[in-house]
Image (cartoon, rainbow, N blue to C red; front, side, top):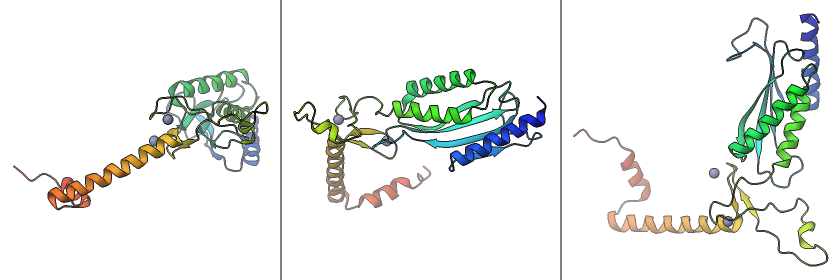
Length: 220
Ligand SMILES: [Zn+2]
Ligand SMILES: [Zn+2]
């Protein structure tokens, strides 16, 4: 296949991706621009898309998938696969997810596969949609509730106690909601107590004490 055909094929794949995923970011590199790869063959194009689990009531994992098509893709080289800003996955699940994507990319060598890799990544994130590890406050397991709230209230005609709700913070750290609320209330209360003690002992407010601490040390 001539180079020109490969470029046309890549352009068509990018067009199809931008149609299917309106939010996808696409970069197409000129053949002369080799500044875009750190190692290996020069990149022809790269895409990046933010992915979350499908149809989940609560997302405990998320990641941005970046796929770089090197020159020679798809006939000779698979895309380079990276997860950017993986959230809530932990190292082991992130590595497993990348390994699955890499295996799929190797199987699909010879045909345009970026869309299939995006779909697979989203499937894998959906399967992995549970908090990483136990609740760091009470150290017991965290069970995501069912996506359908009806499901937990009535099983075989008897009422089953629903597992405690989960609080996922913006950083994707997750705790049992009651554990987090107790800890938060305790922190707020102890902070207020410390502020009162500080004021009683020194007459200073916390803000003034912090400003004092931030000042450079006087020369000795
Ligand atoms: Zn807990
Ligand atoms: Zn956090």
